[in-house]
Length: 347
Image (cartoon, rainbow, N blue to C red; front, side, top):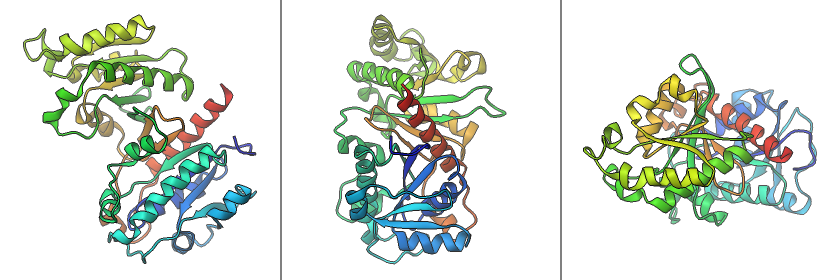
């Protein structure tokens, strides 16, 4: 951990024409007494935007070379550090520009480097626009895949989480066996070896990064009614249930498969630390209904801590000017990353 009493969190500000820079600045400023957020983006643009948001916000820019030479400079809690990753084109709010795609990608590279070099303890990512990076000539499918490749991680797991609220009596965590796939491709993507590894990753990271000593994982079925004994599909019988048995034999507290349409009730969730859903909308529709704007995306399996917001770039909202963005999810992402960093350090 860097020489600080508080966790140091690298924050990539995301697509410059989107909501990311504003929510990053506002959330970092609001939480600067609880942690040390370090913004990664174009220092001049962020300074201009910060002044537009609130003239009392104070940023301190440093070059990447200066950080490589001497690490992060000491600072008080009245300034937020910005590692400068200059953009290539002027930013017009709400209008994408592929000329800035490579600069956005650089912020991710710098964030990974900052953790690997010990300058920061965790990464929080604001939303970016995949199209601008691809149109800049770089094949890019998403934050999660890029970070996995960058850290040479063979398999990662996407998990979204939210705190207790009027609809939920306890925190809800939902991990996914498959992520961004067409629905017709999901059954073929559920393979025994990968599903078992997914369960092991969830179990390990809930212990090591979230401090849950004996994680309880509930697993959904793939088909309606969890296949109804094979009448509505055999994936539960041939793949999911046998993998659950393997995981149990390895000492994991895993159970299921449960019908997804009845699993998300308090009487079941009270017995769970995480639900493993088979595909994107099966699990995330429930979580986002209960917590949209206050959830956090956590990548499990990486050799570093990474959280993110649960929403996109909101280009239409940004075009209306500053002051319309809700920083709720970004603040949750920052607080979650800081808590995970502290757990990781204490173990």
